[in-house]
Amino acid sequence: MAVHEIHHPLVRHKIGLAREADTSTKKFRELTAEIGRLLAYEACQDFPLEKVTIAGWCGPVEIEQIKGKKVTVVPILRAGIGMLDGVLDMIPNAKISVVGLARNEETLQPVPYFEKFVGDLAERTALIIDPMLATGGSMVATVDMLKRAGCRHIKALVLVAAPEGLQLMQDKHPDVEIYTAAIDSHLNEHGYIIPGLGDAGDKIFGTK
Ligand code: URA
Picture 1: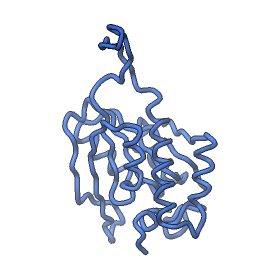
Picture 2 (picture 1 turned 45 degrees about the vertical axis):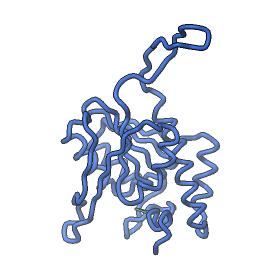
Picture 3 (picture 1 turned 30 degrees about the horizontal axis):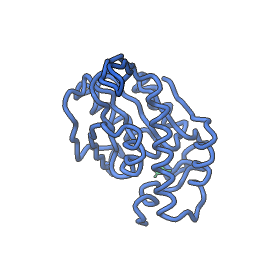
């Protein structure tokens, strides 16, 4: 499985700011969107191009455009919504598919409660967005759902990844490329990433 930890100075700077304990909701939301934008830029690097001829100001001109069906961005509710605007800044024509997962308190496994996918998934690249790849359970479940729906080309964009989540993705879905601003140390006993960001959903939505 390819894991891309992005070393661009803007990404390093912004993920550092996002770690500050007393960052305001506004600032955290802005940083989440900004890092989402930069991760989307990186994730599109290998998109195939095709040449087309258009009417330019002085006559026909050959240009390049991204080939194939439009990308679908897949926010995992609820924290994934925080990265959506940033990703759409880079890929404004993207279609949006949404996944909602709840945790079964007995099995601790993620259970889908919402799934709304765009059509033609077999012909689209899906970019899953979720700020935190912690245990990896939600990400694995989302990839399972997308693959069941026919999607074959999937990437995941996360602000911070834990080694445990990366390992689970390697075991279950080694074909999925992961783009992250940081690979952190480990999960604590409550499943939080250390040093991580804290509860990304609460920080984006201003809840506690
Ligand atoms: N979800 C979060 O929001 N933060 C973590 O550290 C782990 C999961």
